[in-house]
Amino acid sequence: MKFIILGGSGLIGRALSRALGQAGHEVVVVSRSPERVPPVERVSVAGWDGHSAEGWGRLVDGADGIVNLAGESIGAGRWSEARKQRILTSREQAGAAIVEAVHAATRKPGVVFQISGVGYYGIGGDRPFTENDPPGSDFLASVAVRWEAATRPVEEEGVRRVIGRTGVVLTPRGGVLPRMMLPFRFFVGGPLGTGKQWISWIHLEDTVRGIQFMLENPACTGVYNLTSPQPVTNAEFVKTLGRVLRRPCWLPVPALALKIILGEMSTLILDGQRVIPTRLEEAGFPFRFARLESALRDLLV
Image (cartoon, one colour):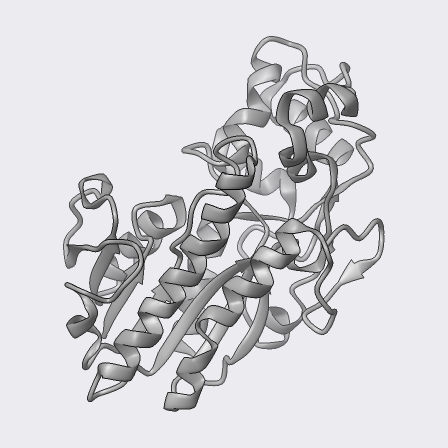
């Protein structure tokens, strides 16, 4: 099978392209930064301008599937108004480019996989969210809503569309985990804010396996929460991280300090969602890392 991945130079994209290539599929990574895509057998690279199908759209003709992971990083810096606009427009433009390419293709792809985030649900306290819950009203929720909507028109072309709302993806090679580990390296680890906020996490390997499962399973359509079935509070997360790293967990970081340092972006740390992957479990997907401690030990020990 042939898959095209937009945004394939990121953490998930690199791992997914490698896994698909190792499974014998042909993979084309479409990236604004082709130099960041490591050489992998059966994986080729095409550059693009970030907002149109020019230069790569012809590759969609006859492809089996498209994976859309493209978009400005949400956690790479403070949310100025200009940066918030880039976060939104980069996702909408990537979606529009996919719609353009699918519309022009004589032989339509069988599936479009659209990544999204659990921020869709807004700030939820202790209540569990499933795929049937409505969106929240904060900035991250509005990003997720518009991100998901961007590729909706491919359904009018008869293409199966799957949306994966991913949680906090755990890997020591990037993302949030190395940042959370740093205080523990200096023996000053502890909960962030109240520690009561939920973290809906998922091991990178299960993220990749989950996407493969949805790509290859024709019965999968619509929205799926791509998170572990066992979310934890921030306090539980850092306590488990300290145990795995054999470091004390004793020094809380006040919410006010994080708000001063990070501004509005502090919501990524201080607020959370308790998200359950109901549809993925009902579809029969077997998680390899359902428990946080087993995931962290696999990644860090």
